[in-house]
Image (cartoon, rainbow, N blue to C red; front, side, top):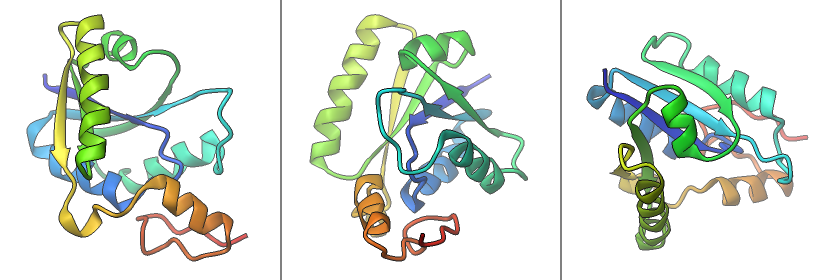
Length: 152
């Protein structure tokens, strides 16, 4: 079974994230959207609402599950028997950052492979950080995410 973990904080889950998962589906039997939890980090959206909203997006696809994890991603991958980590690359800065993480993960757990997907060109400017900033300042983020967020 080809099982991949797509890790991230997904705060919020963007159209770019959705695109990567959708395009990776033909390559894997199962994709786990794994929401990393860091108790020291301040999130805009709480963990449970992020998990529920992402689950709702994929509720009709049995190949996709949404889980929460703590600790090293490679250790989590081993614990659920997933030999692949799925990552998206928007630009050369992402590549350098993700390459370094991928190489460190490989050094920690040689049996875990990182698979990179280039972001679709129309979505390459979308980042959770920028979308969060728009939301915090009262902007409508619904064009950047597959979810329906209300401005508070």
